[in-house]
Length: 377
Image (cartoon, rainbow, N blue to C red; front, side, top):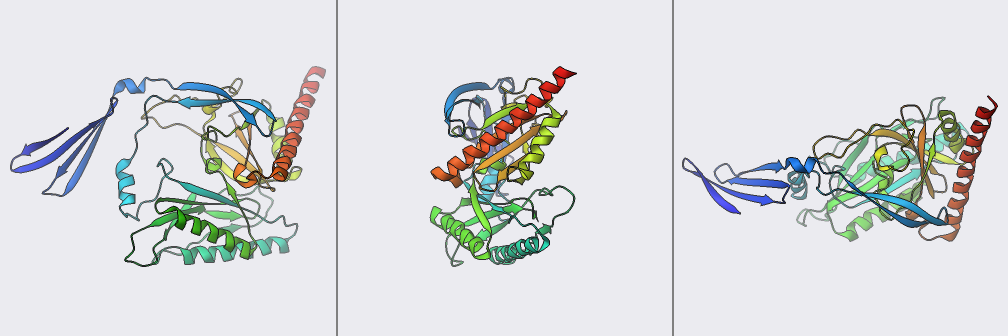
């Protein structure tokens, strides 16, 4: 509906949009050339409970059907349409946030398996060339990109302190239609951790994005860096976001078993630390018994409380392992394929299955040792 409101001698054009549980009132004042947006949310929407849908999917890892759960909510959470509109219209001050619905392509660089300081220095030199390429790639007038390089020490690998990003202008001439993408990357590069790069966009045609992705591949190959594709949800809070992904969940209800597994992943099974990602344990509704996790109830207004989850990626690039620890050190182990890298390759899939079977067998043996020790005592 639309109507004019009179305020002394000024006229304000107002429109009201309704979705049942949400009402948006947009008011335009020609004299000040401003638009005000007021949103109203119904109280009854806050009391709605999410609905769980269970189904079976074929697991290429297990070679069997696996139970999967997806959660559906009747009402959507608030969406920042005004911020999205500003970005689309060319506001380069803001950046694309995680809550926005936008396409993206994610990659990781796997560090070289060096055994001495010379090998580590060689990898650092290769990465330095990538930093120089980033500085040439970003829009003119931008500040210099500085990515800290962390070398090997007695301490565990250093996690990335958030994400950094810069804008890539996709126009060939200034007179062309404004098209751009945002390249998001880790804040630092630890020589014992993967380095994540994501190309995300809102205003660009697909061919120009493909060109940027191919150019990144060629540059990394030229510098001697091992760049592979990874699913975008591998760094998100909900690794079950893709309804056709089939993560395998293994509850490990003993802290010492989790510690042994985490140590074996890097020392025995050839995994690399892939940073610590915030996760929501409540998506694992079938595995929460005997775990001490924060309970997140669905809400349109209240923010969820997430917990950090360490994630590892195998050097073959085929398999992810995420450890979601509770307050007592116990963990839910989430294992899932990197299908974007496997891409139908039977040899890579067989490699991932072998690794998965070895890890699962290790967990079973560790839990059996613990049970045997408890029976003796």
